[in-house]
Image (cartoon, rainbow, N blue to C red; front, top):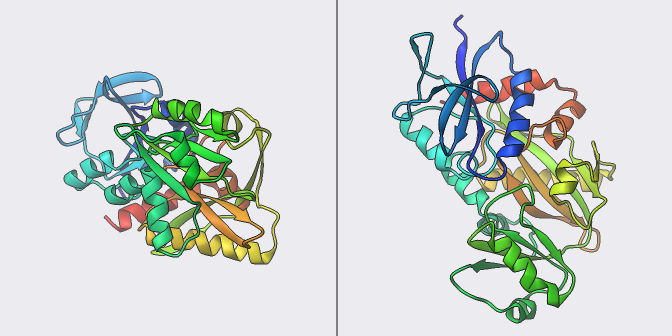
Length: 330
């Protein structure tokens, strides 16, 4: 049986490219080469490059049909494994391009990717679907809103974050009113839209969700305990946090978090593997959804690989499962 040709995409046009290069190493090292021929593609602003090994450009990708030349032969792909965090791999742009070419890919479709990349729209749709979310305001750079107006609608402390993007880049937790303007300025440096969200007291959890053979599955979820004021970039990627997998919770909490995660996956029409963040508020006795990551990190420090292993699965088998699901629904 001929092996399937898989384009493994990394890079991207945002500051999250540095995380993508870490993620792709894990994926590349755990893909089943007995089933698939793997071709590493680095998507950068200066071009799309096929690399025989990470960091060494070999030849450019033909964007007209997403093919490459290898040893004088044109290589067409059977599917794409997306490992790009941020634009253009997580916001629907590449998904729309591959849809036009009729090429299947491992992530959510273009519409869901674009929606979930916008934090405000994500929580709005989830809320319509019956999922608890924090009270928030959606700000635009072209429409100035004074901090006093924000504080008349939201109670401190608040989180201020770029509305599009991830890895907590440009994000702040604001405890005092006189710090809000500075936090808004920081967030607007990263994006033309900003989300200001009320802080919810509680324990933070994050859960991997995926689809296999048409059914939605949840992974053993993780409690995140950070040394910093919140789960920021340093906590996520530089060891300033403690992750407990599986989280130590009651069966009631476990069922509620898994149920909420499954509901989010359904309501947002997700595909492939996603990671959903929650705060569990004990007073309300329910989880509040924070955001959805449609291309979650896969580096050795990332949470999804930990959850896969906690589920008794090998990463090679898990990645094969995601590719096979993609091919089956092409």
